[in-house]
Image 1 (cartoon, rainbow, N blue to C red):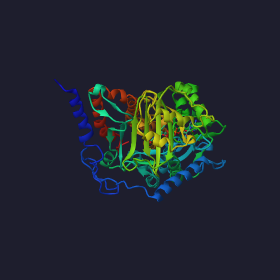
Image 2 (image 1 turned 90 degrees about the vertical axis):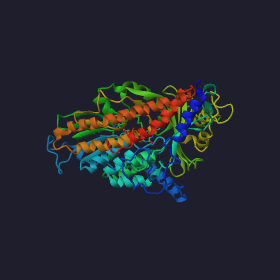
Image 3 (image 1 turned 180 degrees about the vertical axis):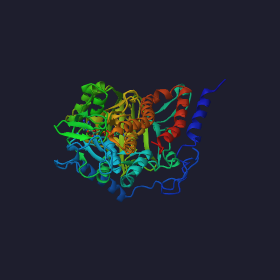
Image 4 (image 1 turned 135 degrees about the vertical axis):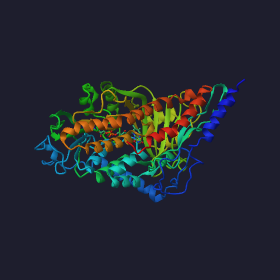
Length: 566
Ligand SMILES: Cc1cc2nc3c(=O)[nH]c(=O)nc-3n(C[C@H](O)[C@H](O)[C@H](O)COP(=O)(O)OP(=O)(O)OC[C@H]3O[C@@H](n4cnc5c(N)ncnc54)[C@H](O)[C@@H]3O)c2cc1C
């Protein structure tokens, strides 16, 4: 008779112990430089020299924290984006000859809506190719949501190709996260039904992955984590000319003036602008996409998915949560099923030297934490519930409603959470180091790949979250936006006559859509599976098999993400 328990244990032992890709013992640590990169054709099992993690010095901690605070102050003051209006900006009047040869003296004129990652990178890439660029951003100041983001190896390569100064500054400001373990842990004691498989204690690793070797194998630099305001500051200071970003400039609509004749762009404040190309980098609720795809008026509103234009106050955040429910229906965007609490805590985590990124899995919720650099931890608590929910208002009896909810949802003491599960201590460690006012909440939306509708029409294209909003599990939303910016500028730089713009935008879409479609689907699937991991694990044979497949597939997923071809 087959002993299922032994079989399942053997499969699991194989998964966790002998995988050629688990990070710990296999990383051959010799060099602190990521520039010692060898052939990308090496086999998946070979191990390349890797950067060594050494604890951050007190000076480095102070540098990272101070830089973040200074950049956040700049962002709040919209430094570099709030120059008074002149009357002679190039975009105020059309070119004398709109339908024309594109030359060094008469370069392409590109207007970008949205000054988030996608808009800023696209502007930097177009500027580097000699085009005239302007960004219209609706917000009056930048209001980041959820702390730093991972600029992964693929996006670093795109930045390096766009502008070496930007790339160098980002790497200098960033903290390498690829030099430690990442993976999935079980949040609480859990095992296969009736002991027919391995039984896990809370906090046990289920899957580990190494993000470093796939990057080195592809000849790419190691992933870093950087504060969003710092990324914006670097792009504004090093990537684009002064005065490129105009804030409080919400685009209402645009008019095509004919093939090769450019566009007239109308702002909400009554301003009119003229350009050869319009790029909608205006996030998940994109106004440009709404017009391009003929969507409902309700599809479009004042809300952002990522770096910029987020809620400035708790009141605004509550309003956005309600507005988003209506906008999602009009915009054909999908509510992911999760609300997400996020914060950055100034705290030296107990696991800092070993772990850079981990997910604690549970029933209908999971807790993600990542090193944010400067002895800070960034965390996200994702909880499955209907869209549009808001927290209780603070009262004298309950001054910290968000924290209170989170401490209960991830309770680490008996009687545990509402399901009776007693959680690993790590979530509580970070909650206890976080102030109520630093916790931001947002429902997460994504969307299906735009295979039928496309990303371009006439002299208009979209990029970033406007084109491919995705769940944050893979940390690739901003990275794909960065690749988009690079590719868009490459294709536009081939345009010799304004009549060729449409063709160049179409090539941009065709080159980007296969890759972003796969990544959007992986991010969505990953998110849906994470929350059911807990159920799946308990099924004899299926659970261990599922874990094995997850472990084995990770190197291939990372090899797909970390490519210099985009
Ligand atoms: C919790 C979480 C964690 C994440 N972690 C990572 C990570 O580690 N790595 C990563 O790469 N990505 C990550 N992402 C994804 C990333 O944040 C987004 O993909 C990225 O910020 C999208 O940038 P964007 O510029 O396309 O859109 P946005 O940042 O949403 O910017 C759009 C901008 O357009 C403006 N705008 C909107 N409408 C108009 C209009 N009509 N006129 C003018 N301006 C307008 C908005 O104000 C906004 O500033 C994460 C996302 C979340 C939610």
